[in-house]
Length: 123
Image (cartoon, rainbow, N blue to C red; front, top):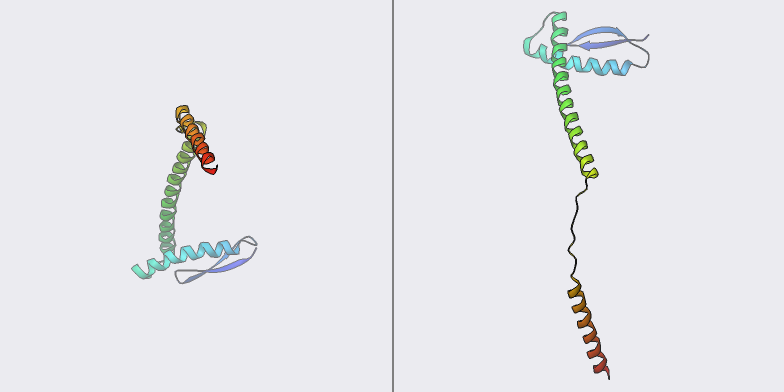
């Protein structure tokens, strides 16, 4: 089991992890270190246990907010999917205007007259 040295708030810790999990540990340590460094900058040095506790609580608060946003987005996605399904189950009827038969007959009559006139002019 590999041991990794991580730095949190300017303090080094040896932590064991599963083989191949080192990069996950490093990423998590980086997040915790960012919170701890912010606390150290704002408050100054504090006992190690308190620094880790406060940093962990800040990360937990951010995580809870992100989980709330995720739930809200999942609810919105589900509503949109249901709306889309309802739309595909009940497609809208679109009415296309139809040219009345009288108009078609009139155009055909006009076309026939025009052709007859063209034929007379050719002679």
